[in-house]
Length: 184
Image (cartoon, rainbow, N blue to C red; front, side, top):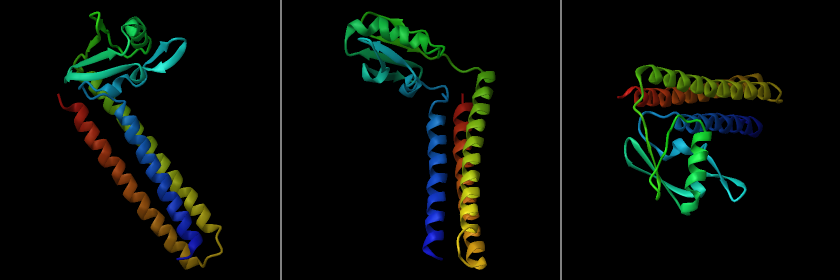
């Protein structure tokens, strides 16, 4: 296989890996019933006039599977953090005890679990589309090379095998997440 085709295949592999990584990152945002500090990643707080991510002004812990505890580094930040959580519209109602904020995570209803599974499937479909686009781009680039027809066909087969591997990886990740969401 010539060097040009090897580079095209390697580039498409990197692109497919990025699609899978993006999927994994997006699935972290879909909660599966257990409390997780990642749930508050979208919360920003007004920290002396600057919009600052919550994890940069407080420690976030999970004392148990249903509770998030937020310990600000400065007590004066408690009202701002509370306001930030409410503005993030996550459906959480923080309780302020004067020292820290406590959020009780309500258990997911069956209907909400199904919605979350649909959301996870949608994200996995987006990842598959990204992988297929990488395949299409690679195949187009391979056709534009000055290689022999046999080399081009073999390279397209290699790209298809890569595509199949990454699609299977996405489906495996989805099935794990689906099981996690549906487990009560």
